[in-house]
Length: 261
Image (cartoon, rainbow, N blue to C red; front, side, top):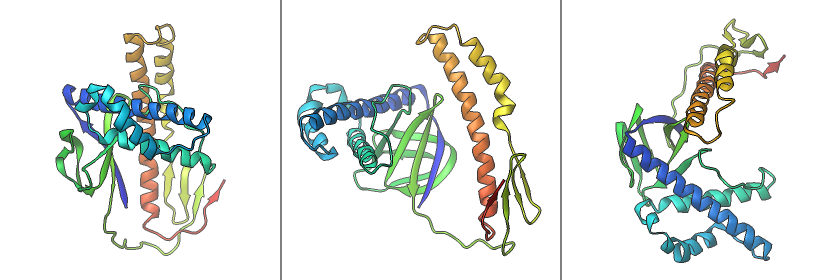
């Protein structure tokens, strides 16, 4: 399996539709978590299937606006809640918390068991319609997740692919992780540290300084928060790009155990 995540190019109408679906998913997740907590306190053993049944038969008919959005959204919201509790009981995560608007806005949809074909720059998504991506995609997947980060929307999915053997340039290479450089290899290749945060630290500090007296929740506060989020996303992208280049290079050679300074 291979995963991909790419930025979507949306108009204002599509952005509104994405935000509505993300809000729908958040509402259902929080509703399910509240009911789960209440049922657990009363001595019951809830699960996501029971939550989905109660929601479908009793709660959903009370909210007509939900008919205008994809029903797959609430189904995956309950599945995600069930997985969160599963990780908690296994000691792999913290107790699930209520979601807040603007934080990790996302939703998942599928095509009722049929594959979703992603071809080229424009793609037809179930219920959503035609959307454009910032880069071409060729993949067949069963479900997709759409999320928002720093004001932009992204599409992510996993799909099967046929791997090809990569010709080896050398038999063995040693990796030395350091502080001044990202990595130094025994074949002489050096990957310099990108120091992305240091490059934008002054600009980030300036944005945070200008935002200190703005009223929380106001329009100007939201604009400033968006600028800060976009700058932090840029820093994260630079770091991720450097790591991808390093791991791609290392994938072409056989490794000896990593020695870290």
